[in-house]
Length: 616
Image 1: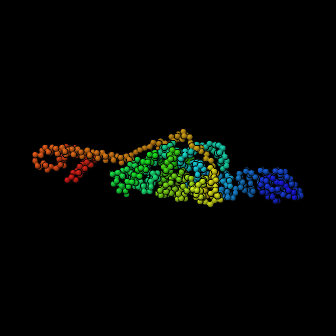
Image 2: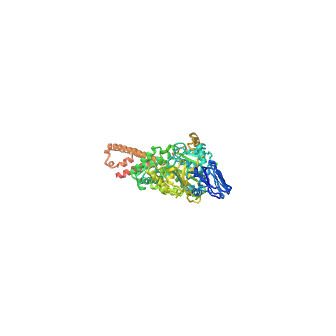
Image 3: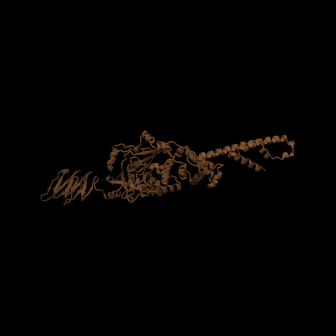
């Protein structure tokens, strides 16, 4: 036996044609000799042949025996017994099991490619069945990890599938979904990594703005439809004050006082604590002056922040969110919030009003093959911070029941801990971007997040801190409603513009919309403020008229007294004439009596005759 150095990439072992991948720089290999065996060594390119067995070293070397061929390298293919894997070779067993969990027979959204053991596997696509989008979801992750682009990616595919989408644009960079994306090396590189055929596309959009502040069709709601629970959240009232506000709404409804804007609400509260309205309070259970004062101050401060524009008419019809474009794609409704991002309590609660209004108006439809609408609730933690028990109960009930009305809701926030457990339990689809663990609180949030996922072959505590931008840990509901395996995923690149829509084009799109003429101009019709003001003005005029009439009567009495004093000698019988009789016989009284046919005249007459009776 002669020793033969093998510094190539592979080594044949044993007889019978078995081959194994070698390691670069491995130990010397014994090469068998026998009759007819010829062994040659030629350095790095050495080849050995024996009984029809041939080894070839190097990056592209191939070994053949018995019809079995092995090829090394990134583009290698392996075939045996009809099993073939392209691009990545045969998937490792855990990766194959994960990929099988995302096999979908019907319509689905393509999110990206599986990440396993540091490699991106484009043959293992991660998908969400379209029919499962009404099972709600959560998109979470630290700032800057790619949550906004994930929203854009999902919204694009929903629109392409004919599903309307609502999303909030807090920073102004989601508006680019209306324009085709810009090709570049980064987009091309990402598309190649995840097996995506990328094509620049824009999607049909409608742009809205709260109260017309910022670019967009003005979106308003009346105070009445907003309701006391949501309004208490906006005004930051405590539980007692919230209950008192509910009494005020009840009174306004019972008396036919329309609460259209904030001045209507302020007028009703002020009336109920006035001398005239205090008696009304007893009928509705009472409202303390101190509580009313807090509510009035909160309303005033709210108006001073410019929030008065958000309430009024014409009220937005939430059915506008359910439309499709003429080409059959779902309309993407983008609420532009950049101009009011310093008022998070307001816009987050306003989003909840939109959802609650849809819940009340839409009919039950059961399970559909695709949702009627998917609603993205961005900055969701702002909605839940400081929320009252009644508010949380309302959210939980809405999320639980709106699924059967064909609406899916995705909450977007930083960690799952931002969402109450009762709401989190309703969310069947999860896209978790990277988390940071720089502080003890961060580490606690990380551990809590890991506990919310199903069992997984990944070390999630480590993985969640190592994910790059545009990567996420995903688990969704499969077509049969079961949770899919946890999958680390490199997400696809959005096809639309990943940045703000040009201002001039956005403005043109807004003013060119058929909805602009319907909602652009605010309307201030008669409501509670005008009715109460008119009543108070009538009372003021009546009081002034009564005072003037009293003065006239007193003047007439004084005149009669003066004339009576000059005729005192005419007889004692006339001294018995009552003062009232003298007044009744005066010309002033006859003039007043002619006005009795009017409402004001009747009030004055009653007042005068009553006074006379009391004096007797």
